[in-house]
Figure 1 (tube, helix red, strand yellow):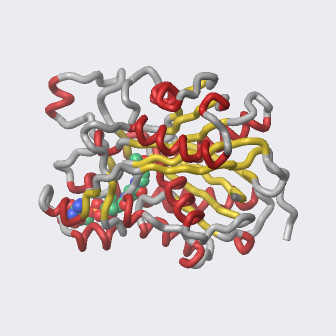
Figure 2 (figure 1 turned 30 degrees about the vertical axis):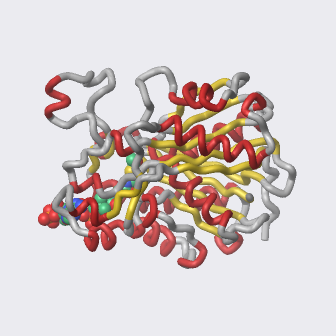
Length: 331
Ligand code: ACO
């Protein structure tokens, strides 16, 4: 076995939050032409958490961040930088990270959003790790948080059965030498942007009566194309992250993939020979929560005792852009 690379930062605290309201596949059967059986067989999803009318992205993000800060032993006013990965900003501007900063009372922080769709948490982790390594900040609060239910077309069965709301946060600080981020990797291919996107609402197609009538403010996805690219690029990304960490796949304790579709996860695991019992899957409970899905899965597996101190976790994601990213982390 090779010796691991020297980590620059580590995750000192993790926290998550999801809305109380649950929407099951059986609820969806009453909304669109679909069935619990179709959704479970094609995606693995059984239910998802959906925001109530009086809550939003920044509420989830702030709740997750508060838990992560408590675990790290930091107060909100100690936070130096907040990177919020999201594609469901509350407003075109200012950044939702600034709203989270205000809700937390993180009065000394720089705060901004990062847009990399479902790969957002891993993009933010790579950036946060670099900011600690460069000594720009002594801590970085990395958050993946989404209000996907607000941009889901609840009349479109091809997409509305897939998504859910949620948030996950990690506090990065300099590594203690035992825990740490051993590698990060990120890539994108903007030529494929239109296969997974929200066509209107930005400066290309500002909101108008037509864009609303044509339902262009909701997520649109070419599912089969996304599926193909997701398997290919995530398989490549896990190999890159393991190599950059100077490890072998047999050294990895847990694969924690973006939770979009159980068939995508199984296809990747099969290609790199990771057995099912070493993969963290919780998409049946939450659906695809985009940038929140990896911290939601990681935190759950840590809390129920599957991930133990010192375990090596291989994280991988794919999303709109297209974007993809991976990382090896020792918690
Ligand atoms: N219920 C019942 N039938 C449905 C439903 C539904 N909810 N949705 C689609 N169908 C039908 C289709 O109309 C189609 O019918 P047809 O054969 O008569 O035309 C049939 O089921 C098969 O449709 P496909 O789209 O080919 O089904 P597929 O097996 O590809 O599964 C899915 C669809 C689940 C969307 C899959 O393609 C997928 O998971 N894609 C990747 C999604 C993903 O990973 N996204 C990640 C990024 S998300 C982000 O970045 C925000």
